[in-house]
Amino acid sequence: MAAEDIGGLWNTKQPGYEDKADIQAALKLFLYGNYNYDVTNEDPQQLLNPSIAYYLQQLKNRVDDQEELGIGSDYLTLAQIQAIAQPTDGYIAMASDSSGSTVQSTYGIALYQNEAPTTNLANGIVWIDKDSENKDIYVYDTSSFVKVGTYTEAKGDLIVGASSGVTEILTVGSNGKVLTADSSAPLGVSWTDLDYENNKNISSIYFGDYAETSLIGIHINGVAEDEVLKTISGDDLELSITKSASSTKTKITFTGVCRPTTDTNKEVFLGLQRKINAGAYSTINVGLVSKEFTSSHFEWLDTHGATTGDVITYRLINITPNGYVANVITQRIGETSDTFIVEEI
View 1 (cartoon, rainbow, N blue to C red):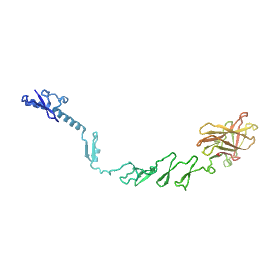
View 2 (view 1 turned 30 degrees about the vertical axis):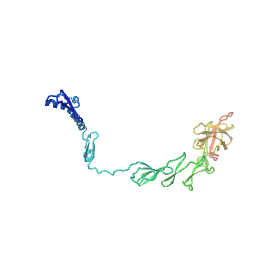
View 3 (view 1 turned 60 degrees about the vertical axis):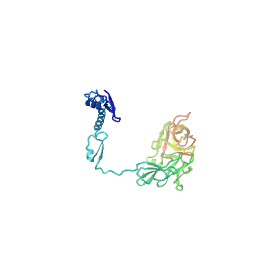
């Protein structure tokens, strides 16, 4: 028996003209695509393609898939939506009793243009002034654009307020210049030369002035070999300065009452020590202390070799030079100026 294709878009089978006129066989061929198809076979995977039964099964499969997904959306009250216990994945519901809110037409975007935006304004819009010298940056806040930044062109540029809401660039000064408040300058500050006489880099300590000792009498302190001289409070007699660009030397001054104690007939010495930043202390000078209870006054000049910004620290210790015998130094605090001064020159 012959079977012929029928149709293009929905192709199936029909009997040939030479086949006998058997209506049941013709319908079986038309529906299942073959005269010999087992109509008791319930496995949809066995349906022949092309056939009407095959197409119907494909449609059924698609319907079953959609029904399994459930309803995709609904139009409910807010209370009904909140009462849904386990909505299907992908479910969308619109609240019928919601009043909604104003649609935001423009959000927090950045605009790069010559003039400030005037339409669709919203808080958070950033505007970069394209034709400004330093690409000034503004943000829209409530009712106006507020300047929040400026692009800098070179190393050392400073952003300085010129007036309310206006900033300008102050370029870096030349080496050794200092930033100074200057009401006559356009930006209120300017780079100027360091006035050394009015801006000396100096550090000092009055380690036992009369006001501290008058109520308790003279304070006596014994300093053993290699120990640091003390203040009336028991702290190490130590001072630091930060090297400026215009100085290469430091002057150290000490005034205080000291004398040998273990053997008052043997010499005793003060050792001036220095360290730079977190380095180790080294002895850079020595001073001979009188055997009598008199005020000692020492001045030393130190060419330290530090660089600008280094922290230089000085202290005084009881030191025993080669050829001498260790001795204890007694400090009597409160009988003289009791000063320790470190200053750049």
